[in-house]
Image (cartoon, rainbow, N blue to C red; front, side):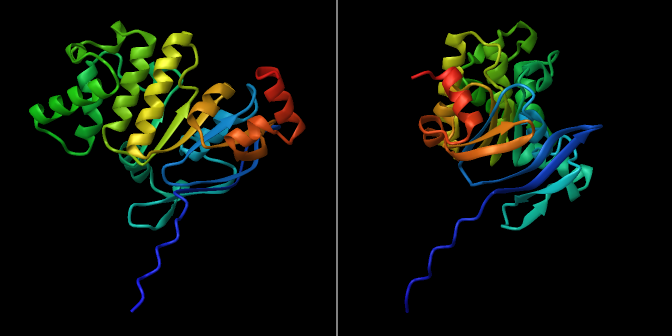
Length: 264
């Protein structure tokens, strides 16, 4: 009897023809893409191109006016993200998903300890044993390169880079399969950016995370993402393998974007 054929890989996330308007302004027009398990996808473009609007719609932080977002659950079924109840969206956001904000203060509780920030997501899943919560928080602080002795300090006394690493630990502690990141290196010093990017690359590879990262920095896209979409005025104008798009862009806007940042 022949061996069974391997199952065909399926997209983890399916985004189809998303549209979003703010009055007379079309912020997003027919945006579509698939995201595969373990894949890092960069969304690039200038300020005002629609990157964050797309990210917020895909992550169910805002409701699109048209189109749909489907997510493949662990049992293999596809769910329409925007058709879920608010309670199921919240559960998804603190279990299978994570969201790393550009400003760490938007993703952290600034007046509670670093350990409590990491443990809070676990408590939302029913963890109650203090020793287990603290041990897991300590483990994750070490994984994001924060000294364990800082576990009882609040994020208010952390540097910008440490806050961002703490936000990453807070998101990854529940072992999500999908991570959204909105300009995670913006506003950081170059040396701090480099350290954070090395950490992100290592963790995404180790954990086989699927990631959608919004960035205006093409060097960040090249370092982290296997695939890239380019946005202009709310539209995806080009998509493909990151190295291919950066080395041989086809759309005039992509050519302009690359030449302005990566001159020959």
